Every structure is written in structure tokens, then in C-alpha cells.
Image 1: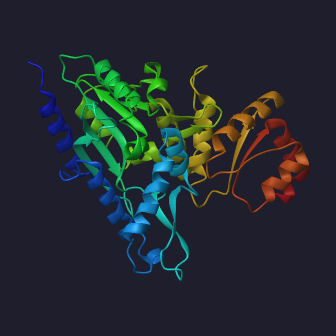
Image 2 (image 1 turned 90 degrees about the horizontal axis):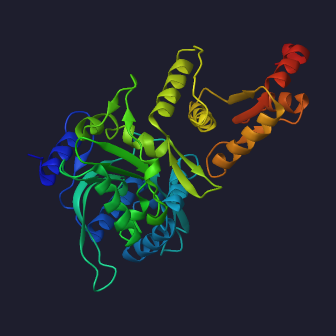
Image 3 (image 1 turned 30 degrees about the vertical axis):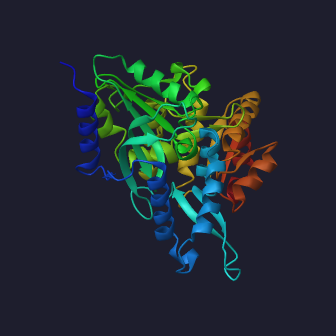
Length: 378
């Protein structure tokens, strides 16, 4: 007999809130009012210095709500805000008392993962507000909140249903406008029937494409299909926050959020580990597997290491130099890293010697010439 959805829900929450997962179950957060108040409490708690001991007033919180609702019109716009300045999503607040002026409140930080001012909560059976009088009340299964903001939504079906039923339900709810407002901040959808589990970057309903539903595989390239095993690997902290903060990329050309695939993430983690150990190596990916996107995300993650000032991306042809630089700049347009290409060897040397934290895209030939002509000065 198939496990009931209510039992699956309970088991999933139990998995998320036991051991080292760091999620806290909040049975009291069932509607918009409760979640807004939770966000308000976290903003007060995380910004005591900026608020100078004076908590956010009702009028000020209305200002904050209006600002946030403007950021969550689409998951892509929400992702732009979440990327923030240097990995921090900030809320500008003009205080009622003129002596305080305009201040900036930290809302969510991808620099403080599994610590600092980051908090992690799991809710279930959230009641989505009716949009019209004849609209039906909808209840969401399980949602994960980071600093109070809904970030990952999980839709469950029992084994009597295909996991695609869960995906179709999310798409239907999105078309109906249920993933607006606070739930417009959701960055990742997870769908499962217990035996088969997939994840996908959030998007507005009409643009949600089942082609991009992705299975998780572990480092041994073994599929992780069971929903509880998926929770252990993908949804625990710090992994879940890293998926949102470090392994998502904004495609400015298509106005879409991209969540990396497992093999890309494992490759990036291997590069980071090798860098920490001062080792070298290579990553092999097939044609069409997203090597440029993997490379860009490696670059972004390496530049988050304080001791690294430059990352150099080498290509072997000038046309690839221009193509890669264009792709990198498109991804980085709303990110915190600076991408520079090099017109000539003099320009490359200048950038290598600069004090700026940069990602440099250049050719092997330019680097070789620089080494031969200027290596004593580098």
C-alpha cells in the first residue's frame, strides 16, 4: 500500500529537523500574516546595530512589505535581489524619525551559510490566500524558509501517482497566481512521489518546462531518487542554502534563473577542495553539458575565498576568448564579480598586476607571451 501523503509529509519534516540538518519546524506559520511577522522579527534581530535599538514600526514595515513585494514579481527578479551586493540581499528603509535617515537592512546573506545571521525553518500546510472570490483555497505541502523567506518548495504525491503529477500541480498553482507575493521568492521547486524525486529552478507557470526537471546523483554518480535520501543530501544545511546562494546563476539574456546540475556542483566542489590543498587537476565534461556555466560558477566560488585575488580562465583560440567573455559577462551582470577580457598582452599584464579582485578571460598565447617577456616583473 502506498504511503499516505500526510505520512510522507511528517517523515520529510522529521528528516529535515533531526540530526545535523539545522532546520527548525514552525507549526505556527500557516498564512501570509504569520510569515510576514516572522520576517519582521528576523529583520529586527539581525539588524540591531543599523536600527540603533529602535525596532521597525508598523508604518516602516508597510514600507518594507511594499519593497519586498516589488522584488518578488517573478522568481528571476527575486533572484536578482537575493544576489544583492557581495552576496547580501538588502532592504532600504527610510525611517519615520528623521534623525535616523535611510538605513539598509540585511535580509538574506549567501556569505553567512550555516551560521552568522542565517536561520532555517520548515513549514507545512501553508494556506495560500484566495485571489478572487470564486478561487479555491490551496494548501502547500512543505516549504523551506531561509531567514523567513520561502526559498524551496516541495510538492508531494504518494507512490500511486507519478512524480509528474506533483510538477503539474505546481505549474497549475503558479498559473493561478499562488506563487506570488512572499512565495514569489521561491527559487527551487522539488517534486516527488517518494520513489522518484526531481528539482527545478523556479519560474512563472507558463515558463516552467519539464525538460529541466533534474535528478540528483551523488559523487559516485549514483541516482538519489528516494525522497528522504534526497532530503539528506540536497535539502540539509549547508547544501540547501548553497544551492540558492552559490549554485544558482542568472541568465540575463533569457531572464531566467539557472540551478546547476549535480555533476556541475560536484565538479565545482572538487575544484574548491583542490584549491584549498594547492592541487591541480582537470574536469571532463561532454559537449553540451554546460562547461561554460560550470567554469563561470567555479570562478565565482573561488573568488569568494579571501586569499584568492584573481582567477584566470584560459582558452586556446581568440574566438573562444570573445565567446566565453560574452557568456561570463552575461552571467556576471547581476553578480558580485568583475569579468575582464584582454585585448592584448599589455592589457593582460596590467590586469594581472592590479590590486582588484578579478576574473580574467584570456588566451593561452597571451599568457605565454607575457611570461616570456615579463615573468621577472610578475
